[in-house]
Amino acid sequence: MRFRQDVEPTARSSRADLLDRVDPEFGFVLRLLTDRPDRQPDAWEVLEADADDTTTGWRLSLDHVMLAVPFTSHPFTSHPFTSHPFTSHPFTSHPFTSHPFTSHPFTSHPFTSHPFTSHGLPEYGVPGSGGRAPVQWLGSRPVRQERPDGDDARTPSGAVRPVVAIVDTGVGTHEWFGTYTGDASRDDGNGVVIRDARLPDGPIGTFPLAASPEEDAEIGGTSTAPLTGPLDPVAGHGTFIAGIVHQVCADARILPVRAVGGAGVAVESEVIESLRRLNRYHQRGLAGHAGFVPIDVVVLAMGYYHERPEDLQWDHPLSQVLATLRESGVAVVVASGNDGETRPSYPAAFAPEVDRRSDPVRITCPRDTSADRPPILSVGARNPDGTTALFSNDGPWVTCVRPGAALVSTVPTTLDGPLTPSVRMKEKYADSHRATIDPEGFQGGFATWSGTSFAAPVLAGEIARELLAVRVPRHDAGDATVEGRVRDIWDAVTAATGLELGGAAEPG
Image 1: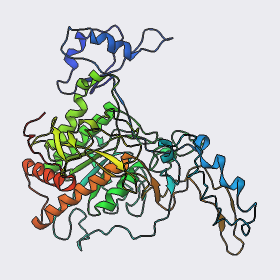
Image 2 (image 1 turned 60 degrees about the vertical axis):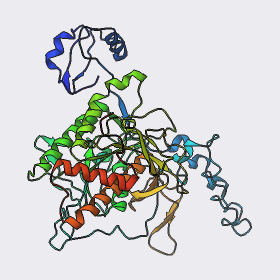
Image 3 (image 1 turned 120 degrees about the vertical axis):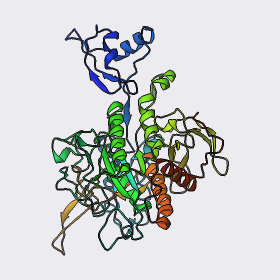
């Protein structure tokens, strides 16, 4: 169960015995043990019994499972290669009589006449319809303002670059982001990624390093099925997010915080602890301690639903750590979720309720938004044609929508899953090979993918860009006071979204 301190009572332990172990702000983590080896303890039974116990002023709640899962289809259940165009290929009925460019598998392709019998959300998981798939990038890399003295923290004008913390799987090896090996002493961030950020007692994020590089979500990406594959559902997820931030605001610095692995499943209490550690790092940066920098924007691309409507009252630990960050001048941007639901997903639904039909967007219920506490920003996803993506969660708690379907961004060049091209042979006229596309070969460093996970960093990059626009004329990092940082965040949020404080002068 949830909260900060670990205690391991038996199922018979008294609640009163634990009172002296309770943190007044964050409580504790309760891990149940059983007296019967043939039966596992049922946390739900404890939760129900706790609801009837009025002997103490505190309550228990389940430690939520937070998911960071965009659309990725499993090749063995829904892959186009199970109903592949090459089984009825134009080369079996000669290309000059039924030419591949006139009746090509890509005009009646399983991605347009889809193997799923019911169209809709599943389509986004298929390569060609927005699912994770390798692509080639022919453009130049984002243009970054470099200083002659090599100071990566400042622009040529002297303005301190905004720092965007990505609480996710990490950031892998890529020409834009340098080298990632899992060993901070060997890693390089190419001046963009802050790879050596740590607290005195260890990394900021609490998710442990993988037992082997092959199982690291940002190196090999095969932790969920190491013997058979395919790639993990969120292999390369953090790098993809980093690439979006970098495309939108090339002059931002990126701070990876490892809080989830390749399966895309995180424990809420561990995410809370990672955020609390990030705040500790941020506070040291505000105080000017060597080796630390203040954080400007946090991207959180994971969430959960409540088991019961009344569970909202027990969300204090997560909402409080996010409030603490915002009160110290950090913008918090959260993905709204990918289930096509109006049911609130948290922490996105901590955002104030807004009226997106108004111009500009208007706050209708501020919740805990105030002049001293900028809003949590909840972001839905948009299709390439400007329509809202079918999978995007929605409701009055969604602040805005940003591009989030079939986006192109970075993935680690080390990702090369066990799936192979359907055809591969030696080249006849050159010393190389010819083949179909390798569905899990990302050596080129770029992919398409879909999810609100990728809409959120678009907005995060926009806010970073607006912050930099404020700082450049002043040649500084913004106002040195917390009050000034909060004011700058509000200005950046308004410029990026149109959202204004309005009448929300007090916390809701």
